[in-house]
Structure formats: structure tokens, C-alpha cells
Length: 414
Image (cartoon, rainbow, N blue to C red; front, side, top):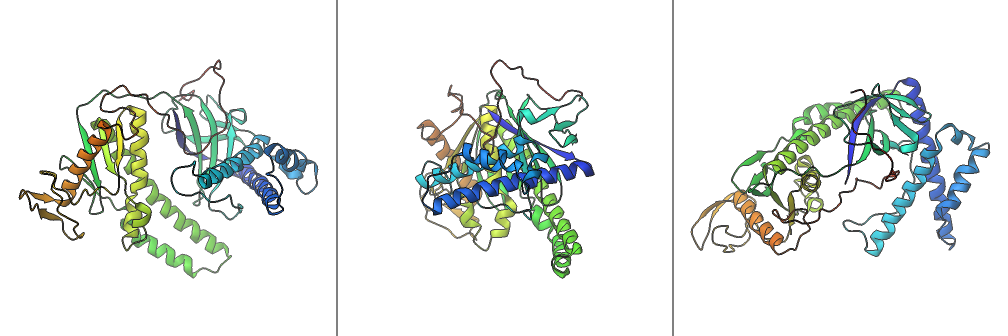
């Protein structure tokens, strides 16, 4: 399976300039190749192949006066930009044909130097790890990195990213083997909510930290300062960075909390079942800010890939399942209830239920039924020897090692 490891990088002034040139050259190659394909499509011509674009927009473009500065960056950066464009087109076409699951993917768009996120991608030929803890990037230099943990194996690709707040990150993709945890006898159903982030089927609750709500006062002040600055001025650029940094702090705190909570659930339970919520629909209601603040989709995604990594069972219960309408004691369906009803009594057996706890128990029962019936894809169906599925990285990554090539675990010198 492939995992991604992110680390903070601290380039000096000359390295920041070299990275800015690399970001710009990768963006120009992307836009030039995208423009050629759009023109060919508008003229009714066949799809322009990647080999032709590489020859015209990279190899020959370096020999012209208007694109001679493309030679100032590594050729790997330019080739990977073209490969990323191919991946974007493939995802778009697969989405149209119905081969890609999930939400529809739009066609590739032009990139701008004003985009808040800039990135370049490199394969194993354009970067290396040094014994002193630095990472060499071709035509950039040795970058200082804050190593928070060791890499489990030699990385196959590297993505250098600059976010909206001006921070630099190195993202390594590593091929690793699953770290299977000892088998347990416990399982849990989760009911995600807003008053409590999650209620488990055993009655325990995970409180909602509400990181965005807690930072609203400072964000409001920073946003007011930004609105008073003249557009295009340097003071406005500085104010924008301050707002972006505050939002980045909120996102980092939420992500860290999600990781800790999801890891704890996976370690304590052999199987975890959650309800497949329509987050995009809920984000269009009056509860939109609270829904985004909770970050349910990111949390469920962490549970899913960590279950694959540690040999646990994970299943999603269909969103149409009436978890809040069914009595978990007798199975009687008591009908829909408004959100203000937090506790109710079953009209059949007389049991008194907490709304969220009852829903979590129903999610647990339905998840067990789906796994027993084999109607969900699972890496380990409650201890049954099922072949584990691969867990790819977030995006299509470039670069791989041959089978006879040695693999070095960890970071030398740390």
C-alpha cells in the first residue's frame, strides 16, 4: 500500500527563488499543453498525445527565446506537470463515462500565479535524502526539513508545496506493508453529529472541539483589517497572509485532532461502522459552518485508510438507512423525528432512547449485517481471512522502483 508523509520545509531566500521559478515553469507547461488540447478539440482535431506535447512544449520550447528560461529548472518538473495534466484529463473522461466513482470531475482548468497553492512533483531521479537530514531537490539545493517521524521505506516520489500562508511542505509517497494490529473482539458503530462529534454504540461520546468557532473572534478582526486595505497594495497582501495563517492554524488543529481520534478508534475496535452522510447537502443548510467545522468527510476518510493499514474492518451504512427512526431494542420503526427531539420512547416496547445513542446502535447492527452478508468491501471481515485491498495515495504519483532495487528504511542520520 502507498502512504503519504508530509513534513515542513524551511528553504532559504535563494531556494525560495528557485522554487518560485520551478512553480512558474510547471504552470507554464501545464497551460501551454492545455491550450493546445483545447484548440485541437475546438477545431475537431484528434486528441493531442503527450509525446507530441512533450516535444513541442518542453524540448523545442527551451530552444526559443520566449521560453528559454524553462531550462533553468529540472526537466523532471516539466515532465511531471505534463503527466499531471494527463491524469486530470483521464479523471475527467472517466467521470463522464461513469468509470470513476464519486462526484463528477470537471475538465482541467488553466493555472494562475495568483493561485493560493503552488506545487511541483518529482520522481526518484530528481531528489535524494542526505545523512544530515536535508533533502536535495534538483536545481533547488538542500532543503532543511523538520522531521517529525521516520519514513518507513525509501520514498518513490516527492511533491513540494507552498500553501496560501507561505509555508513549504515536502510530501513523500512511500510503498509500505500493512501494519496489522492484534485481533480484538470489540466493534463500534458511530453516529456523527454536531452537539457531540460522535456517539459510540457503547454510549460513550466524543466531544466536538469546534476549532473554527473558537477562532472566529480573531478571524473576524483579521478579516476586517483585510477589507480595509486597498486592492493591489502590499499592505493588503500582508493582511491576506495573516488571515491565511489563522485559517491554516485552525485546519492544522482539526487535522491533528482527527488523526488522534481516528487512530484511537481503530486501535480499540476490530470493526468500525459509520453512516454515509450527505455532507455536501448538509453544507448547503443553515448548519453549513458547523458542518464544515466538524470535518466529517476527512475523519471518515482517515478511518477508512487506517482500517486498511491496520487490518481492521470498516463499513459505511447507507444514508437512506433510518437509524434515528428504528428502536434498537425491538426493531420497531417509530417514524421520522425533528432534530429538536433528543430523547424519545418507543411506542411498541416502551424503551426510552437517547437519539444519538440509539442511532449508533442501529448503525452497529446494520454494519454487522452488511459485513456478514458480504455486501461491503472490507479488508478484514471480523477476523475472516479476506485479501486486503490496496490503499493508493491521494493523487496519481510518478516514480517507482524496480523489484531488484534496494530499499532504505528511515531517514539516515536521525
